[in-house]
Image (cartoon, rainbow, N blue to C red):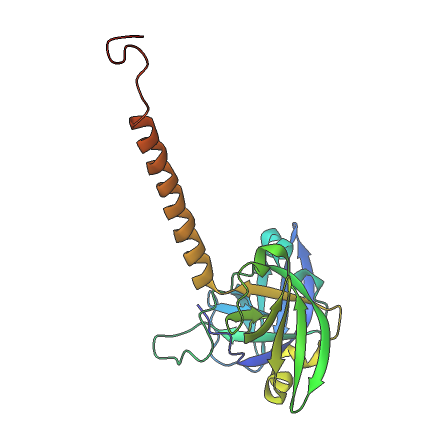
Length: 220
């Protein structure tokens, strides 16, 4: 579990294809990393499988390559890094699982006073969870949705966020990993389940009340 508060920027050193997946080696100054530890790379939860001085490696499965933009990384690319939460950490952003839903794209970047308005295009499967003033993770960065227009949504990015995450390097057309707020997914699932139960009960009542054919008032 993560919060969407990026701890460090890393740099991709090497990308090695591996039986339909890939191994990505990343250089960073995070200390105390352990093999088997979870770490979010551009918002995707990965497991550290190898580590050395100032670097670590993760294995990316075919599923992760299909659902994220990690497969488009190349040596020299900058990535957002966040270590998994501990029970004593502050929940500074929102609950982020590191389970990327889909890849979206940067639609436009517009300066506004001391910030920038980033417009993103989201696939329909993610767009249905977008709520104004709700939360979304973009490349692992916890952001507040400022406006929603169909499948497009806006967020405000302040200079600190632009400097300390990969958002400062993004330009129109770039792909980004998107993870919708998990609370919205659970609410949708619960409501859908209750609706199915309600429909089932209504059908049972109609069947129970169906009039019997045959004699009525002593005549046919």
